[in-house]
Length: 76
Image (cartoon, rainbow, N blue to C red; front, side, top):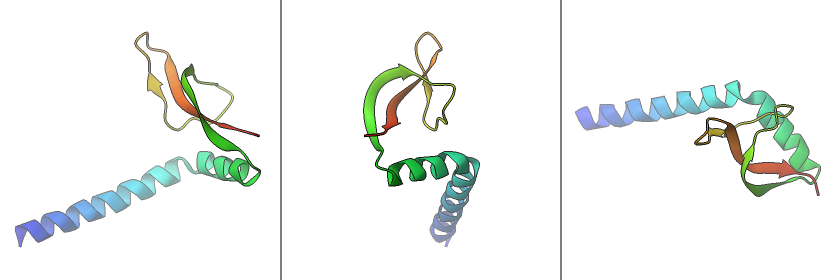
């Protein structure tokens, strides 16, 4: 009984977290979908400083504190 309840709570948490993540980043997902529909693809760019003029989703701090990305959506 307790294990089943725990599984249900984990499932609910996962669903709610996913929905909140998607809603919070709606602009990014819409722009990325538009660009991929027009032929853009995700490319590995290595640890690159973020572009402040574009939407960022997965950024991380470097050792010196500057925010970096690893992948960028590029037009062909």
